[in-house]
Image 1 (cartoon, each protein chain N blue to C red):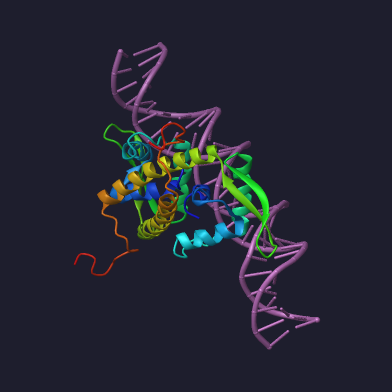
Image 2: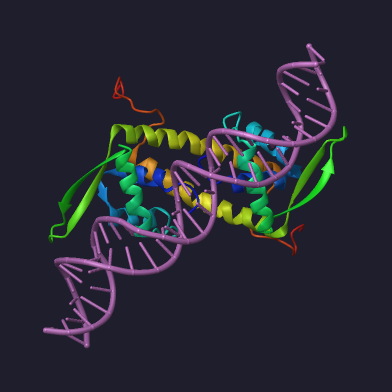
Length: 116
Length: 116
DNA sequence: TTGACATACCTAGAACTGCTATGCATACTT
DNA sequence: AAGTATGCATAGCAGTTCTAGGTATGTCAA
């Protein structure tokens, strides 16, 4: 939605191997329910990350027999997280500097009583 | 590059009215030179923001006579900043929680001496 | 047992965003 | 006079995200 989804997926895989459905749940957890990804977003992304060599995949199954495709972070994947993180902090610093200078309010508008 | 460019442009306009060329310079300043936008990125973005009603534009000129197109934030634009900011902090919190749990290093890999 | 729901994967196509390349015009500096 | 900086713009490709659909199976309640 906002920022690239790849960094979050890679970071979740840095917590440990996981699979598509669980990753979507984990995104919900990590965001306190604010991010609700669809599988149509995630699966193509996972395939892309695999093509790029940032993750590996293997077929597995749950205890009850459901097939799952587990993904694991590769070393290049770990490097990609570091790059994303550096990029993130650059943008975060720029945004926060601008917000600070402009005294941006967290609220939407503020026509009433804003000066009080 | 990483995150959506719109929030940063809107935030810069929250500092005060500005124009394309100056916005690009300001992005460079705010990021300590790490973000170097091209005009091919910015101008279409400004036009889009204007179509969406988040900014207004008017033609002006520098003291020396160069024509400039000045942009100003609208009230909906201010609201959009607040939304972007909320979205930003949601994603930031999710990423940081995952990084924390996974003990992600800031460095790229760490094959040598990482355990010391 | 049948129907609803959760789990679990996939793709295609549209829409949006970002990047590269190119073009134009004018002021300033050397 | 030529090169650099200022200042705007568009076109087209590439990458990303969203929407909408499609398949299959396990679990639970009616």
